[in-house]
Amino acid sequence: MEINVVAVRLAMANKGMTLTQLAKKAHISQQTACRYVTHGGNGSAPTFYKIGKALGVEPSSLVLIRQ
Image (cartoon, rainbow, N blue to C red; front, side, top):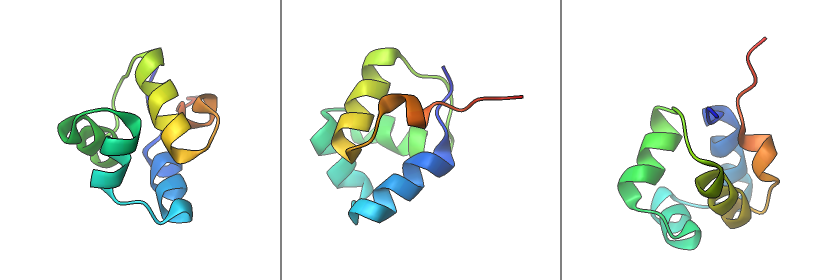
């Protein structure tokens, strides 16, 4: 699964959350949070769940769907 960088950034902005706050709340490293927020890329289902929960959104809303 590929993370949707725009969706993550939008959810962070809506929550007024910094990258550091996201990493702490999602219980992921700051490096991992930075990678997803700036570069996107593939991630595991558990990581999507953690990020979604930390942002208060459905993890599925963070998945990039290519058409």
